[in-house]
Length: 311
Length: 318
Picture 1 (cartoon, each protein chain N blue to C red):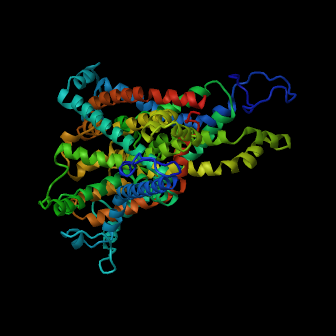
Picture 2 (tube, rainbow over the protein chains, first blue to last red):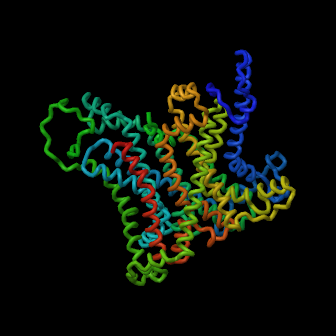
Picture 3 (cartoon, chains in turn yellow, blue):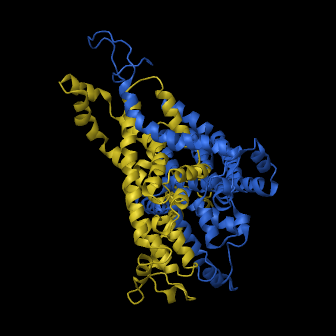
């Protein structure tokens, strides 16, 4: 990678300005490059450990027995002797104010609801704004953009009152429609980008060959859109699965909690003492997100960068 | 072009011999938009109206139970805007916290991106995996894990500090002191936000043509100069968008602060604006006052995002 020789701080000291024979200079150059590479490698390891440590520590703790977690020695690796699934047991079988399994069910239900409705509505809307020119189109796209800038934290009071007024507190539908409205602008915006990426000429060509407009879209454009639909759907999934604020105010009854609210309640119920079980709960919540996230991560930054670089 | 036709947008003039179209109302696109419009109208538009209305009313628990709400004009706003110990302190605290988080996120993110440019394939993959793990962690789960890492009795940090310094750190409660509370909160936010900045900056930097950098180097520009005079101008718009987005995200932070307060912070001394609205409205039942704060908050956010929206509209050529 470092074809361009660089002078990082560590290597500067070795680089005397005296112009020696080419051979000497060359070996000096390679040595300097080597030193630089070692520094970069160390920095890379520092970045890796700094980023990954909390994730690792969560997993590590979740497999440790309580007496070791609360011991004065740190245990960096689970060994066959200490390995235990007790923490997962107490997290999953947690009862009282915070039960895991109903929360898992609620989270799955509300996430699926959000995913299906937001994707369907978002897909239709993105077609409208990409394949048609009409009055109000620009205003709609602008509104979609602006709506995303309104913080949900500011809206929670009135959303709570509205959902309460409709008798939808503590219901999947109640939280689900709030999530749909939260995810939809982003969904439309992203899908719009993907649909724009499929040239309308392809459809036209199919129409010239005798396809109906609908059939041309279904046979030609839709398959090309599949990856974009999957990526957008995963984002909607992650957002709904992780959402905490609205779930906190709308799903307050113990039997209607979603997983993030469960984790918070579980943390409080254990008085922040049963860290092993809490970590096990955190692992269980994070697993699906991490898996899905890794699937689509490549598309996260692409949108922001494409066309944003001058030149 | 704003004529309302049902034709695909890339219409070629004269390509088809069709009878001249009468202007028809654009039924199909509006039918496609209708469901989204209804959802957004009912669950974004209507709540905004309700929010504004509520901010002009005396609205407490009693009103929630069904008592008619009384109009009080700008009383709520007056009360909020003269509340130095409450609103202004929280607002100032939120902004300070945001500035520190954004500055650190951008600095570390850029440095990591530059590092990734210098790394070989293997180490770059290693860094990417680490960043992806941090990025993928749900905010709440991540905060809880950091709470455990900084746990006063059995946390890694106190344990290691005890070993390294020789002094007894066990029992040291990080979250009780507001300044240390926000230090921990900053670590959590920056840890979660650096991956996005680093990946985006890296993607932007790799698009700079290699010849340009090489030419600069031949002309004698050192690494700092190359960064300042070549790289930064190339990725200026990316940097601006990243800064604006970071400002928006860090200003509206809720989950991390709220969860850290659960784990061991003093709420009154550590509220940021989002959590303050929750406390005021949901916890204490001052819906009218919380409404006024929310409206002010919305205006602040829209003002900040104005640049981002304008930039996006311009780039996407809407």
